[in-house]
Length: 103
Image (tube, rainbow, N blue to C red; front, top):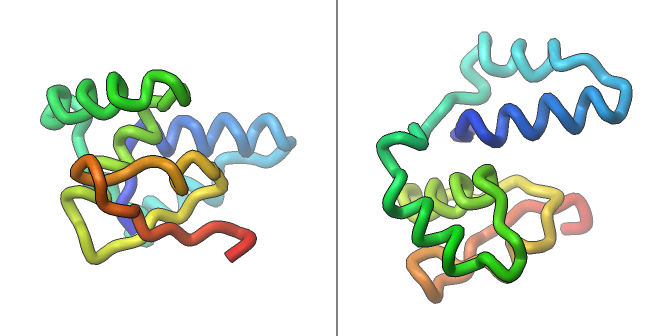
């Protein structure tokens, strides 16, 4: 699975808030199950455009990175708990395939 550092940061924060350690997250990274597939610095212009487009949501940097990954890898799906991904679009108008707990 591909992700980005802002998503990892958010995941670690949410785990800690729920009383869990981040070790399982690190284990997924160490085993290569999760890989960083987007460098924010390399995608600044596209991330900025996405965050401006969805400023009324408001879109987090982690969300923008996942939308950008969906644009870069059109055959993939986004695993998320965030219902805003039902609204976000890749390339402006294409639905982003998602996996959500209620699916």
